[in-house]
Amino acid sequence: MAAPLAVRDFRCYYLGQTASAFGDALTPLAIAFAVLHLTGSPADLGIVVLSTRLPVIALTLLGGALGDRFSRRGVMLLADLMRFLAHGATAVLLLTGTAQIWMLVVLQLLAGAGSAFFNPAAVGLVPSLAGRKHLQAANSLLAVSRSATSILALGTAGALVAVAGPGWAVLIDALSFLISAAFLYRLPRAATAQPYGPRPGLLAGIGAGVAQVMGRSWLRLWIVHVCLTNMIAVSPILVLGPYIADDHLGGAPAWSAIGIGYAAGGIAGGVIAARWRPARPMVAALSVFLLMIPLPALLALPAATWQLVFAAVTAGLQLVVYNVLQTTALQHNLPEEHLARASSVVMLGALVAAPIGMGLAGPAAAAFGTRTVLTASAVLATLTTLAALPVPAVWRIRGSRCAPDSGDQPLDVRTDGDGEKEQRNENVR
Image (cartoon, rainbow, N blue to C red; front, side):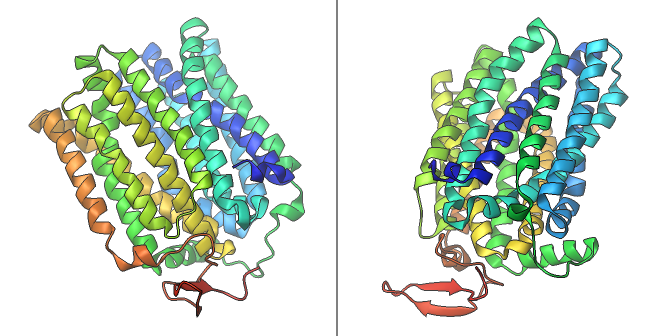
């Protein structure tokens, strides 16, 4: 699992992202309490939270086109500086007591735009830093980092908000983006150069990225699965989980314990994903997703807190394994010059569905009851996954031995000793 850290360039990138992940995990809680301290209005809180997500949805495809057209390191540096300025200004406003809701909305829009530019470029940058041999381990290390820092940040954010105020937590997040930018700046230009020849314009680039994804039935199905499960399984948990914890489990401590269990499961999932090399990663990812089902099912009862913590561990484990296998399959099976754009299309599919699910979960619970909604969530997510598993395209995608291809059909097919067909592209390094 630690093999990618022996590569100097990846190690440099990893340290910067670990610092940034810690800062990212501080901000949601800090911003939430900052808004509640300012106005006490749930509506205002909803507006501010939405302002962090809208630019990511609106600009992710553009971010992917920028990440394939220009230096990915340069795009990510610009994104880190945008987020540093946005969160730094937010911290100053909160610390000086001059913040107003409209100011926070504007600054969160800027921070969200930075995330929309950063994330697709990062997916494309990792293969050139870690090397294709270490891709899955590198993705696993990054996932473990996010899970581990979120556990630490949950406690830190709570203490900072309670003792010093939310402005200090946001300031630490701002400084974490400077640390990330400093490590990105240290990466040699040669390691991040993209000598892919003529580059299309931004609109043409976006269209080419969409075409790369739409031309692959396995990626189309993966996006549909992510969309549906985000909407019918993940979103109801995020909306109704805190309500159930408050009403039946003793309040915030129970929901915090469930959240820590989820993050701990993510660490375990990262360790597993670093060592597990399934021959058919999409089959493995869809199968592992079924570990998510116990959480909404037990929330529907509701079960005891300790049972929900255990279910959260398995849910966090599946999330990381699923995401690592998905990201690695994308990086192995698409041409490197299309990675940022293709990943932005996949990200957009996941991002659009979550707000829809969150918007529907509350009214559905009011109309039918939380138990009915969460039970339906568990059943529908199971049926969606079981329906996807038999699809031939799911079984056709192979593991890390696959070279990038240009579509569903292999460019050159050979038969190995086990009689299995593998996709090859002789032009790939």
